[in-house]
Image (cartoon, rainbow, N blue to C red; front, side, top):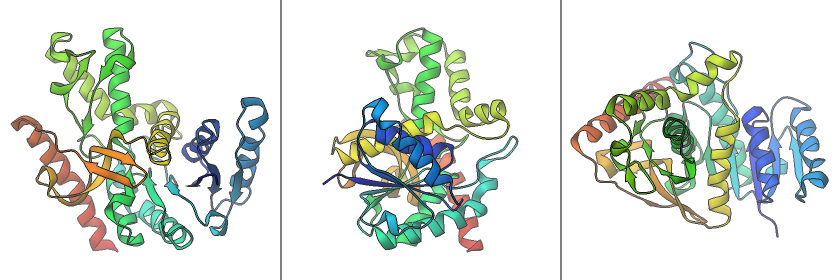
Length: 310
């Protein structure tokens, strides 16, 4: 029996997630959106690509959640995108209502599903979905660090003029401008980054990574990134469905790790058929610990705002 993935939100991120899942033949896909006709039309369009691309999975578009019953994974991408000058914090309350409704409906029909959150502000939306669904912490995961690390690798590859496949990097922390690229552990085929680039260049790349989403929003003007976010999401989906046990930086609920409690935060985790199967606690130096604490405080502040409002 084939696996089944529900993607909530048939916008650019959601539709590209559905397409990538189909292209890799990972699972049958149900695309859900409140906009009448949009998930049906996009689902049909992706389905009709199958004979050309060589994939053979079912793609269903729906405006309700009955078709999602029995999903192995639920990916929530629905929400308002950022606009120029808008921070992720501005999206907080508006997107909370969307995520709350989506999570409630999805878990009702798929109580055993693993939930992957993509909606911003990411770390807080993970917390909201976890609270709403009542799922164990290993079954609610945020897509952030995979994307942030991909951006970091992209910028490093460009600066060094080397293949991004040879770059090993790690970006931790909240998904926003307080994220923490761990430059000390970054290397190119084992060669430390500090031996390849000077401090000023590295710092400039760190800053660009922290503002990676905003840079794309500035170019697009009427939307936000979707190709790389969907690719990052599907890497997580694949690791879970195939039980690959990849170690990826994802938003996970922390209970004391890194001295952080009660919030979702970007850390390295092992992703397998059980969802988050292990949280890895990297030994950090004092500067890295301080940056992580600052990032955690930013996430905690948004969670506290949400608690007061709902």
